[in-house]
Image 1: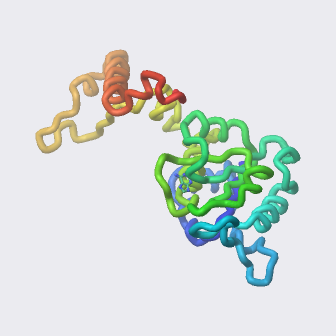
Image 2 (image 1 turned 90 degrees about the vertical axis):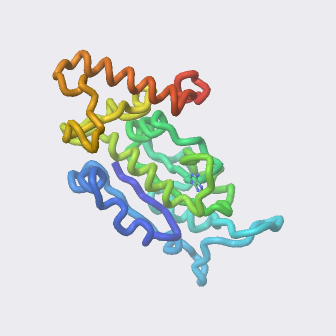
Image 3 (image 1 turned 45 degrees about the vertical axis):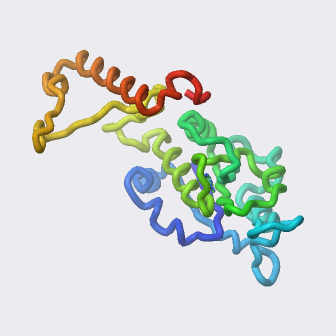
Length: 237
Ligand code: ADE
């Protein structure tokens, strides 16, 4: 999979993809991640990437020309109806669809090439959305100063689901949300720490009992912390 990130702050991403599973996936050739400075696609002599909003108001809006030029360069088309198959252009913004594991799974399963556009909180010219963006994504109901942290979240959550990214010792099947529940509690040695004991059931080697306990704990935790996942109010699980 190829992932391109478009941003006005390329330095923000200096080392963020150089750790753990993402680093391993890059080294194994499972994913190829490139970060591009939007300013490099600006055409005017001042290399302007933003401008004041028509109609007045605070802040600056990202201009369409550099974003269209970048997408044309990276994808070979600047019309989403003409993108090659399995190509997605995601705009990270608070106005987007709330990110869920189901959406991450769609990205991981159905894309070869993903371009992420990091918006600014003031906004992005709407023509970018109209012509280029296939998915507008929000990582939650709060406002970041830009889409950069959200792009990191999206890349991380997608890459760990790519075939072979997790290695044989782990599996995404048991992740929180994959089965509609939060994950159960986990323990490691020592069996007793500062008077706090690991539940006996985990020490007795009875795998059927352990699975039953894990499922019960996952349900209990989900009911207490995220009841919306059980009642369907969340609309996603
Ligand atoms: N940019 C600003 N806030 C954001 C959010 N919540 N999700 C994605 N991108 C954003």
